[in-house]
Length: 170
Image 1 (cartoon, one colour):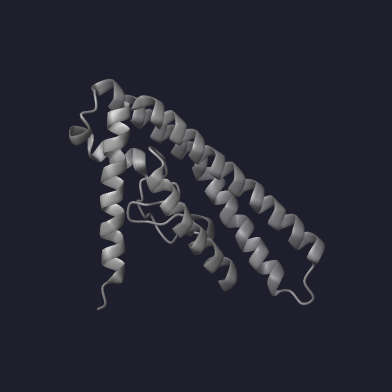
Image 2 (tube, rainbow, N blue to C red):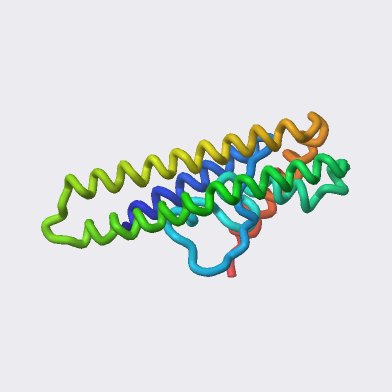
């Protein structure tokens, strides 16, 4: 299970770099109602969630981006729609990961059932990834080219701050 977590965290780091170069993306707003599942941890918190909450960041910086009232309303609608779609999928992924963990603890493991659960979990992750890309495209269509460029600059500065913070020793 630790190897799986390490793989996911590595993937999240890669996704962070990829998302910074993308003009727009969406994800949950980073609130923490309680301990998050393995599937949730695939998203990094603190502004760069798995598909980085760029819509949330754009909304927080609406004055700097000079967003119109219509743009703000459209971005909030995209964010809300995205969150309503991914919440049940995150719950499903969490349940599947618990089942997979249970199956791997059995001796001997039922490899056929384990493979089926892993494939099911991957389908859920695939759907989550698609929904993130869909939100990215919908958000991109709301912003002007100048706004997308400005948001990209904001995100690069935020990433550099994140990297600098992680590099400091206590």
